[in-house]
Image (cartoon, rainbow, N blue to C red; front, top):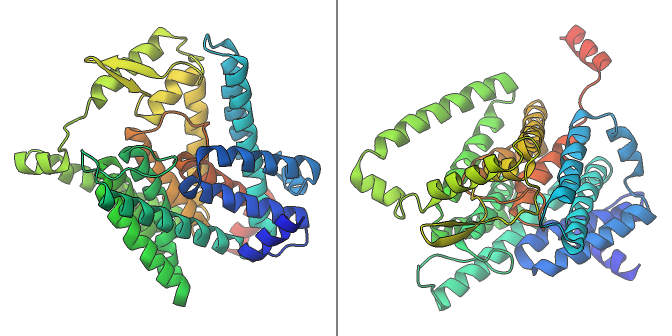
Length: 407
């Protein structure tokens, strides 16, 4: 109880439920742990959060409301499907099965408690943005210091703790970018100063990772934030966003025809990615194309004598692990989440979720091995936007009719 009170005081959370305050503190610590804590810590936080969820039931009223939500049911199907599919995997062992189902439970509890926190804790959105931006800034600063003291042989910044290679570090700092941007755009005084410092550190860290995929995702993140701030009608936003993407693709195609620019933008060429994708696609087609090989399948492939772990593409990974059923469920969750967030762009929270989701959709093209994983950038790019969308319950038919008549 003393720890709970200390956490509540640190995050300055207020609620009529002590259990919900505790759960909200654990949610913030969960996302901060992705930047500042070793991998084993998130498991302890998950067990603590699950214990609060099961014993004190801080989100029970919200689960009752969510049970008729199509997005919630689709997400629940996606999580359950990947959990059940593990039972027919030849690599399934008791340890792997328990670990997978514990992670599924953690994600489910995270989603439902996050919805409860958004609904019932005042200023929780602000605490969330500040917590993630601050923890990412500290992580970026430590990584930059480590890079200056002992520069790696390839001269690319490697993250600390969970981000053990430049690609993971780049995607993590990219996921934190919208939080810092929101602090700069929507805050004042010390909070805006924190956002500016975080933004500068994240930009420098991103540059030093030399991860082009993360740079591209950041560009989309900035584009989404700028458009959603000015165009808060879904149709106008979609039209301008698609037009900007089309112009960007045409411009990039022309630039890549210039040899000097090509070498500048792609100094490592395609870095075996096309070969890795082909090898993983062949494995996916050899397995059950409808049901997949399950998430517990050995993710390593050998290309030109080099061993690579994972498909380096989230969509291909989901297809290989979950087959057509898993891929359609995953894309369905992403699509429904996107539409709901676009329908609520007048809210800053929805704009944050949209930035994360679209930035993640781009980052997932070039990286990502599993959607059910330990707490990492995937939680920021996927599960947090889903939680934000779930907190924005779809309007009922009667509400839609009243809105149409009043218009």
